Length: 398
Image (cartoon, rainbow, N blue to C red):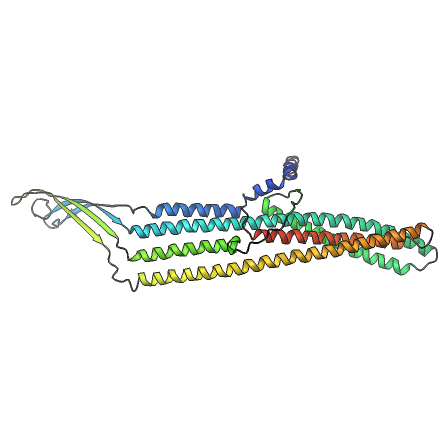
């Protein structure tokens, strides 16, 4: 069984390794939250179909005016057996309004699903870049460990030669301890990233992160997913107002009863047919329909306020992520210049060392500084990608 489980795990890992980013995007559509929204939209479409249907007819059967103490169907003229059918016709305007409201809710859920997918896709891109960042930083940390080993050997040789290097050895040990703590944190971050990838995809892919380019906002509020969801919410409330207004429309009803009579000694037992048409009158409109209409209008006003709030929030979020991206780009540029400067310094010190002057420790210190800066650079690159992915996720791109 253990071998079988190991085989299954290996197959899953191999499948995850083989996935391209488009494969991951396709797998993302199977996320439970997206499937739930798809089913909710389908449920509302079915409700729209049901809303326009007529209610079931009512069929009745019975006896009328039957004497209790002298049971007979032929002694009294009004005694009869009856069968009837009744059909109600709710307001067509109301039925259409309820169907329209259900379809509007389906459209709202569709926009919510698109927003959710964009957010999940942004999370996926960010996680893949974060996964790459932790891998790069761990590799650089391992290289720094090797450099510290070399620096320790140099310091020990200096100490053996009688030069003061004891304090430097203590510094090296302190820096190595800090590096060990960094490795522990990176391992923990990698595990957290893998857990979030499992939540998104069900597996931990080894797919390279895709390049992500910023999408410029046109300035139109409807370009944001959140605003489209809010706009769809207004459409739902509009249909709710139509439904409330339909409350003043009459609802009709038709009833037909067939009465079968027996002939008696003093009368002929002709059968009877009774028909009836009913219609509702909004007599209590001030207590019923009017408050419902005011409530529907208040809900629409709230939906419009939510639209404005969503537009402001989305624009603010876009600006925030854009600022984060620009800040990370500027930080990366500063780090790049520092790396170039230290590389030039290392080249200069190497020339001096090879001429027989000075020692090798400053060169290793420079290499350690470059490795640390490259680790910081990896962090800034991941922040650039994360901010860009989340910024793009706010916008409608399809």
